[in-house]
Amino acid sequence: MKSLDGVTAAVDHGGSLGRARALFPHAPLPFVDLSTGINPHSYPLFDLPATALSRLPETARSRDLAELAASAYGAPSAANVAAAPGTQILLPRVASLVSPGKALVLGPTYAEHRRAAAIAGHTAAEVDNFEALAAANLAIVVNPNNPDGRVVERERLLRLAGTLRARGGLLVVDEAFMDVGPRSESLAGDVDQGGIVVLRSFGKFFGLAGLRLGFALTDALMVERLEAQFGPWAVAGPALEYGIRALADTGWQAGMRRRLAKDAARLDTLFGRFGVPAAGGTTLFRYLRLANAAGLFSALGQRGILLRHFAGRPDVLRAGLPGADEEWRRLESALAGWASRRDDDAKGETTQ
Image (cartoon, rainbow, N blue to C red; front, top):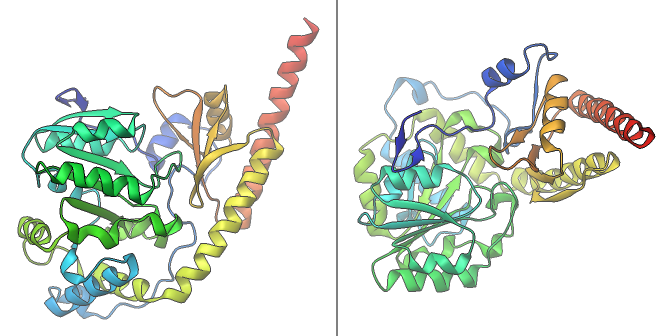
């Protein structure tokens, strides 16, 4: 793989069924893909107006989307919202809002932030100490964090933003999972202070990752700079229509948060039955730590259950939520098979 300033240009992510088939060619299909943090209960599909596909997006619909996003996420106004075809494409563009310097990412976390900062010309590194971020020109915090669900309090983030702003720096807070996090800790309402960019992902909570829709919330001047990079029609017509309807549907959102909380508790109970307690996460994914995480990943993969594992972190796994009842049954059966073999191996060791 090519590298950029020591940062690999290709990052392994969850959700690749092609990779899963290569790793586990004899696994029963279809895979139960628990390797992502995407809601398995997606927002209901609906018939799009023909014009969403046959015409270029209208400015008025883009404005409607920005207004609804500001309301849903708590930004001061639509002028604080830049919509994009997915959050991923925003990362290097947001990183380029400050001149190249030192970029520090609070880790361990989503690897693309470090890579995107390097693409924007920064010297990028990951740090595990929040206080170290004060030395950066560009500081990046994922909140709630992926994969462990760690939450940094809003007041700490605001103090950091003030420190960076005083010398022309920028704080980026990736709130991709804040839809299911403690929304009182969101910085969305503070972006008018300047020197803050909040990223919000549409596809994860609404379960429509393939739609490619995301938002940068920031002060109006930075919104203009970002939108100038994209030019007109940055968001496709179908994404506009789904974004407008879903962001306005507060009833569905409230009901889904309750459902996800129940599903996450159910998943914790299921893993706990087989001696794998959850060590963190959000209601869209659970963070698991165990000595032989690689063994569990492999055992479930061979049974067509795909978890997320992390290179260089052999004791960590992340598990998303099963959707249909059949997926829950398959996961339970696979865990039972793994636990039985583990217990048999343990007995064999004690008799030797």
